[in-house]
Image (cartoon, rainbow, N blue to C red):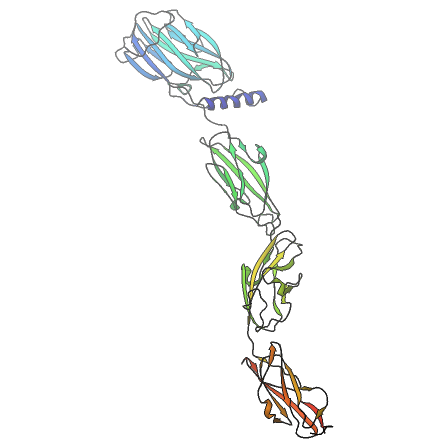
Length: 498
């Protein structure tokens, strides 16, 4: 309560210093003093306060003319004392003049200071006349303790308290509204002071926060207040009514949605105290850009990706990615368990095997035809990764058998070797002129995939031109049988005798 009085006085003092609307008229209303009456034939100065052994009590201001009667209750018409106690509210700042119109004696104390001591038995003055006057300096809107006495000896009984002050040149009865049984609580007319970002206490403040942030600022005030928000971009903000904690829905620098579409969000913060006094502070929140990581968009941006493809195909996939930061150069790279088996175009993101994958000869780390590689997209500072597993499946391949070869001169009746080279294992049948060589119907190959061979020992029975061919039946049924190209040879007579 005392704090509110001091704030009110500060307002009064400030206005007076500026010469604005001085004097300030108090607007708080009272309900009158507590009034006590008792039968009392004696009067002495200073009079004593009393609230018991009374013949009557009342509430009001000091404005009575009982004529030849008494105040009421069981009080007599003569020989009684009146006592009023409570608080008086100063109407202006400055000197206040008080006037008594009393029959008989009158005594006035304000703030424990004697203002009027009218100790003479006499008839009460009327109009603008006073039986006695006194002055005291007061401050507008301030509540002061007051005590006032009147003693009636005999004859007519009257009791009035009047005042005059700057702006009120004539005496008027001190109104009930300026008197109260308890101290006045001056109205709280002072709006709270908001402290915003950078300790700003004025009508505006500003702050910058990084995009994707939500915390803005915690506002404070010089008294207990309720916080609210409004304004141009107010819908993007939230504030706690009790704590003043302001947050914003995470904003994207690259996609501003503020009223001006310029990443400047404006919100009005309001602090309202218990008396309804409100203060606004307009806050400008500027969203700043930050470097955000690029995003691999292949496979719906999932952290892992699986691809299944047939053997003997080099190309795998062309990766795609994006970066919300304008003007960023993105670079692709690979790492991981089987990275050495691949290459990636750093610009286009095209991922390919370094060599044709062969189901029959897996080259991945655990030789199970499941190649694992980590694809990375970088903006030069931040990255995104995706682990891809490429599973190689078997394909129905054609076996390859080359044309038969024979070294040296081929003589009739002399055994010579016919050799073919192949890419798979199996059994090879050899033919002369389209007829199977009886000793070489199913020769097993030697060597391993993809370098195998088979040799037939042939003893030509005739001379002349002969056509040699071979047919491969692969051991692996995923390969189809294959016939070699033909080789033409010349068989000659032998030079030696048998």
